[in-house]
Length: 388
Image: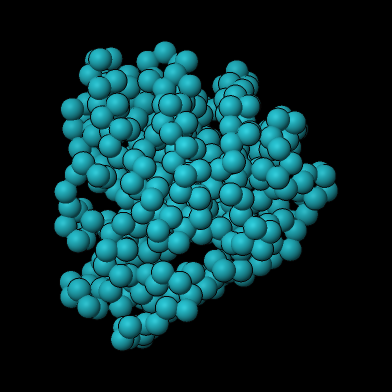
């Protein structure tokens, strides 16, 4: 099943399944005591590492999760994969068989799959979601860049004929100068020597990578209807008509917008501030979408205002208001993909707040608590609107 021409993406990310992030499930990192997946792989005894990863991958996402996603009206899953997905990088167990399973499950459930290369050797952003904290040297290593491109090619060849394939995302969150300078992970590498030369991903490099390398290679392999997705590199307003000028067809720009990230710089939460921030995001999407389709590939309801509210009714009212604000704004795009499906996972127990105070990130917790309408025409079921 392929999304219709006018059908908007209503998706969810399967974060922390094949690319691990400690904050999403800290118990995975208890044995190794490390802060990111690359150092986990480096320090754990190989047989113990393989057993840990196998148990996690087997249980964290299963076919029943795909069934649940489809039953809630979603039509797409974005699957982050690591550069060692094929298992050919020494010390890093691969996970391609789980991607195979995901396509089979998606096909049976009527879901589409967006494959997202989430990590590369040396990292493209220095975040833990880039594999290794505080290191951002990938773009300076031609061999590492070429390796990432070959991974994309191999994925494209493997899945190009899958009915469930919506498209492929070239690279998750290549970091801009401003974001790199303000990121909490910058300068906090475990191995300072390894982090030497770290820095942002310049726009010129990114444009060359996207068109000259990634687009040309992937378009030669994928079917014409498969979408090639490019993250905006935290520079949504910088692309304008570039994709059209380069003659690129069936492409989409991915932007990530988080209220909770904005709050890092604004310590006093307020609903009027959320409205202003989301309205700005909406306006930026409108401008960019004049030239190329735009999706909001990551967003969530997580916000400090709700977190500080201890009364369950008040907390629900805030989350419902934030959901209305965001979904209305993202509706001007080609669609949205929630981050993330879950945090703790199927083999863990947690309370109704997500188990760790991060419930706004966890879509299963949002569903359970009724914090977001399942459709645009669903009533507010008595929930009050939150004043500014």
